[in-house]
Picture 1 (tube, one colour):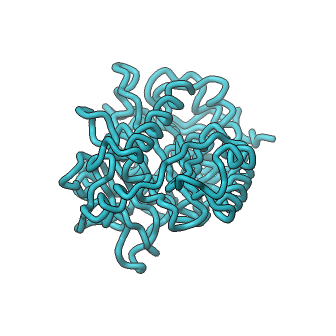
Picture 2 (picture 1 turned 135 degrees about the horizontal axis):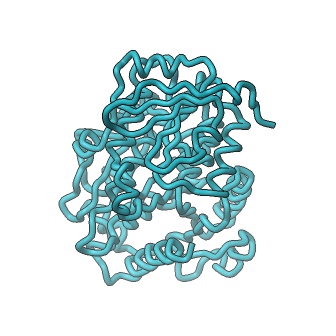
Picture 3 (picture 1 turned 45 degrees about the horizontal axis):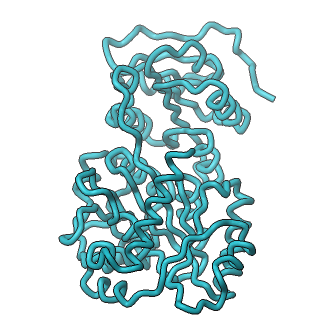
Length: 389
């Protein structure tokens, strides 16, 4: 199954650099190794021929770079297997791929790979390595860091059911005194997060692209609503800008957001496009929003089947029935039986529209309203799910 050609050859080890993390390059031809050495990279460099040799005996913080000739399906399988059998603290894997596709990004996410870069760029790989260092991965062994923020995707297969309302209020219903949550509008190019928060942002998700995006730059792109202590990254207002955003860009942005916020909520598009699929794959929790009419439930059932076929587990899915009237067309118990999942109901409430007109989340403007209490319970259920994993 695995290509083990050349594994008996002695690994090439160049003179050790004075400082910096250890970087192990997995390749047979040495092109990446030569490039890093030629650029005077400030890293301790080693080269091996197989991923087992790179991971074997890791005692400290290490970055493994998989070259294009090592970026095979068998190698990704092996990385997943090793991660499950013997997780290695301080180990980060970066993949160098000749062709970056959505299926490859999905595989990389499942394998726990930190970044995927192209070999044609002169700087992408070194930038990716520096991002790992900037995220303080090298301090994890000496002093355990606080847990990364929880990534929550809010999705619906049908538009107009209130995904933005749910996303914004989830982000706004944080515990007072903690670090602010982040809400990211990945509904391109029709997102309404900015409008719902009364914002006219100078920047958008379109500005958070490129391999040079780092934490200091990201911090300058957030908009801060006046009424609530959260950070928002809006969708671009121009369709042409939305077309320039890739799934890889969005995942890198979300990865950085999870380093600084306890909860990162993503409002997604109502379609299984590349960006939405990538966000759903990466999310810790997927909140699926639906109304209680028969058509909406049919669409949710089909969407659940699709997500299960993609390998997304039911334990990550949370169905939310939004704007539930006093006498719904379908009862929650019937919907749960059809979908095979429990549901959370959020009642229809005029307070939502009133708060939206003011550009304020309803959990802030009317915290005692029934809808606000239901949204707060939803957040608590998500936190409880995190604690019981």
